[in-house]
Amino acid sequence: MDGVKLLIIKRILFLATSDVLPDQEIYGIPLSWLGEQIETSPVKKIIIWLDCCFSGELIKYLPNNKDYCLITATRSFETGLEISYEQGLFTKTLLKGLNPGNYADGIVDSHKLKQFIEKQMAQTSQHPLIANSSGSILLTNCYTLADFKDECPYRSLSYF
Image (cartoon, rainbow, N blue to C red):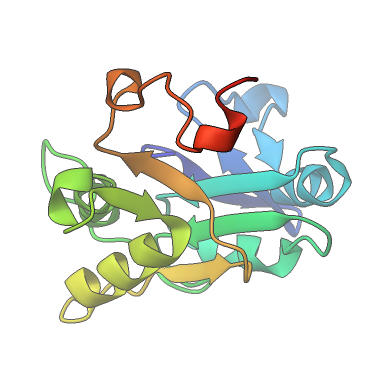
């Protein structure tokens, strides 16, 4: 999520998009609610990337029973670097990291993305937090369905 801000109202942290209405007490989505959804969701793989200040707070909500890739642009106590009229530094790096053309095998998974982001942002003053489960999650690749022929690779199974 690029362009989302985190607001602290009455000691509650909210993900706040541009359509929040603080005057009407519409602050956005409580981060604790998102954390609860991460834990209780029936999905087996969770990917959440946040490009907003103080977003490292999300790392408190790591799921126990599923594969995950949680990446936040900053630690829980710092602001992100914005580039005028462009995406934030983190989003720019994330998009480069998701490009399968930047990998020799053309495959991007959550572990390769982590290494890419850490390497690219090592010399910046912004420090993303990245939490991956031990199982990697395939994110993108350079292959199309046409690359996979509808042929059985095993002769003994050709009957089926």
